[in-house]
Image (cartoon, rainbow, N blue to C red; front, side, top):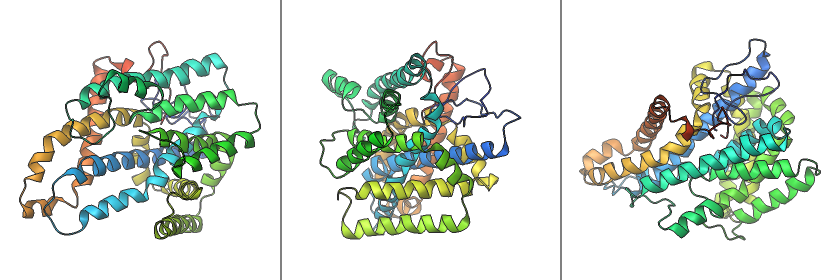
Length: 380
C-alpha cells in the first residue's frame, strides 16, 4: 500500500500499483497490453476498498462505539456486526495483493531487497511509530495500542508491533520470502498456514498486533507464489463465479458464527481463504465499471498516506467529537447515528490525504520514503 516516487516508467511485466513500486501518479507505458492494465485496475480497486474498510473499522471500534448514544434502536450493534464480517477479508486480501506485487521484487539481489523493501519498510515503521506515539498522547481516551513508556516503545519497535504493524510485517515477510526463495514452496506455505491457524485459534500468545503478524504471512506468500494463478483467476472472473464466491463467503461466515467456531483450529484461515477468493473475483468484476472502479483504484494507489496518517487524525477527531456528540439530545443523535461512521470515515480519509499533500508541498517526502532511496517502495 505504499507508494513510490520514481523517474522511470513501469516495466510491462510488472503490475505497478503500490505494493512493489507505486508512484504518486500512476502511469502505464503506452505499449502495456490492455490485460495488464485491467489486472492493475482490479488490484488497485481492491486496495481502495480495503483501505476504506480499515478506516471504517477503526472509526466503528475506536470512536463510534465509545460515544454515549441515547437511542434505543439497535443501530450500534448493526454497525459492529457489519464491520466484523469483513475481518476475514480486509487484511488477508491486502497481503495477498502485496504478495502478488512483490513477486518480481523478491527475485532481485539481496542488497536491493534489503534497502528498498526491508530497510524501507522498517524506516517508515519507526518514523511513523514515533509520530503516532507523540500524537496519541493528546487523545488518551482513544482505545488503541500505544506506548506509554520507554520500555513499551522498545517493545513496539521489536516484538509487539503497533497499529502500524503492516509496515513491520512487510519488512519481515520480504526477509522470509527472500531467505527461502530456493526452498520448495510447499515447505514454506504449509508452516505459514499452520502458524496462521494456531494464532487464530488462540493457541499462541499474541499481545498487541502479533496475531495479525502471525496470521497473514501465509497470504503474502500465497500472493507471491501463486501470482500467475491469481492473475488468471481475475482475468476470467465471471458473474456466475462472483455469485458462487459471494455465496460461499456468506455461508462460511454464517456457519462460523452459528457454530461459534471462530477459534476452532483452521476455521478462521479457511474462511479467510474463501474471503480472498471472493475479494479477487469481486474486484475483477468491479473493474469493468469504470465509474466506480476508477475512483477506488485512484484511492488504492495512495493508500500509504491514509494508512500512516488516519489513526492520529481519528484520535484528534475523537477527542474533539466524543463529548459534544455524547451530549446531543436523543432526537439529534437519532438523525446522525446511522450515517455517522460513513461520514467520519470519509472525513478521516479526506483529511489524511490533505495532510499528505501538505507534507509533500513542505518537502517532507522523507516521511514517506527512506532518504536516498529515490522512491517510496510500495507496501500496501
